[in-house]
Image (tube, rainbow, N blue to C red; front, side, top):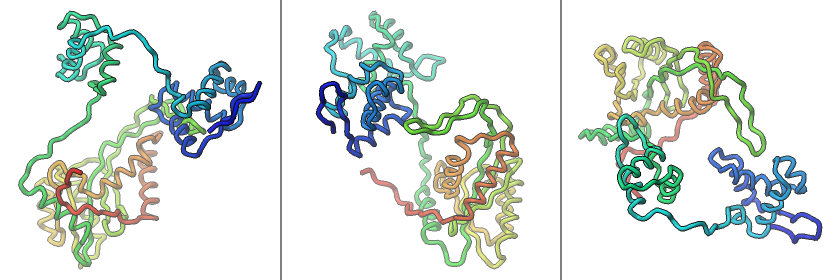
Length: 359
């Protein structure tokens, strides 16, 4: 990992590939602590042969700081980059205060708050057990217990319908073993796609630093998209729509019906969106008997395979996109679809629709 220190010279640092990669991940991660990033940069620069003075100038720190962490790493490896244990003073709060903090953090916050803050917990504890505790101390106690009342994860309880697994199995069977000669489509809409332009230009990624993007933006309206995925080929047909209603949806089905050879049966997967279950849509389906629908169960839209396409579209175009106008957004959406279809492949669907068992 390191060489011997010679008189008047800095400690030589030689990194193994896995250690170098861990340090690079630390530098690149937005979740890394600032001090951890600095120490990793010092070690990486030292491994590249830079002198302490050059590293100090590049990172805008003192030579002593560079010498300290270079030497700590040379002596102790990655463990040397952590802060040394401090004796500190004993806890100033008894177990009753800690219990009060935990009890408060795991209770519902007072109206109108939706989540607890460390300051609010400290105020509540001070009012219940007559102990003055700081917000920072609340944070330390909760961190030690891995308790994060400020974080909320969304959850939706699945509706317990008797035919849930039967419907799941029917959709999956259509993907895994479709009838011979039929067209299998997965159709859905992606609505209210925002056309936003950043107020200031971003900055591309650099070694040891992720790309940066301005938070402030201007709004230029929205666009909505309806898409039909051919499950056998992976190709997608899309159309920008002004309204997400039954009339618009059946007009899109009309296009598909005209484009597909009249002799071929069409099997389609739909979720329970209002435009799909409206009386007008059901009447259209009844008037077109070659169309056979597999409805996903409520709260199971993830079974609709076109959602995989929408997910890729979001990651590669929308999430960090910059759109000067609604027309610019639409042009980039259409360009992505064209590129997707040029190299389209079917998604590899392996789930067979049976209840998943816990490991």
